[in-house]
Length: 289
Image (cartoon, rainbow, N blue to C red):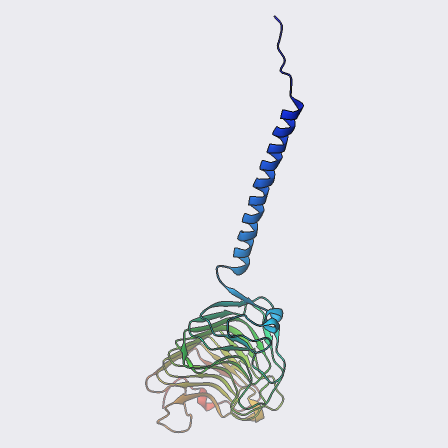
């Protein structure tokens, strides 16, 4: 029996190969587009807006943000640093003018030169009556204040290291509005001769101040009752050799700043003051008069 062999048509084979290649190229294009879209989605991280030096200089991080500093956040949402920010003299680093803003410093640093300006120059500042501001996870260096959220209620500052070069009286590491939380932060004033009234953490009423460390501040923690202050550590030397107060509790019906505990405030025995080389501060007591 004779076997039959199919005769290949070169033109048909060429067309078939061409169609196969076209199909492969189409599939590859689709895959590349999908990967690009997926990559973009990953880089934006589901709507998180990234901030770095180049973006800050270019501006338009939000609709109201102009080129250069400060970076202005006027739209609610999630923001994240993707690099360090080096801020020129005479301006804040980031100004927040909208409520419901989450800013993840992502382990990066915002660097400001020492200023001595009035009002103080801050790494991060809120403007206007706001709420629900969240700042976390990074380093703030220089300027007169680290985080200034005095106009923002129901807010949070957590896991931030603040090293401010205080050169004006009344500057602070962290200032936060009513019903807010300050947790697991590290505040220090690395200046040779800090002025009076440098405050580590300043909080309005109904605050929770927990697990923070404050060093080299004239006043470690300044809080208005009612409040909860637990597991914080304050360390000396305070500037000018002054043991003025580890804690200021307001209102203070007993006069002075005589003790950590006050009516309507709840404190844990785990608060500590360490004053090496100077007189222990009687104002770091853990019981009322």
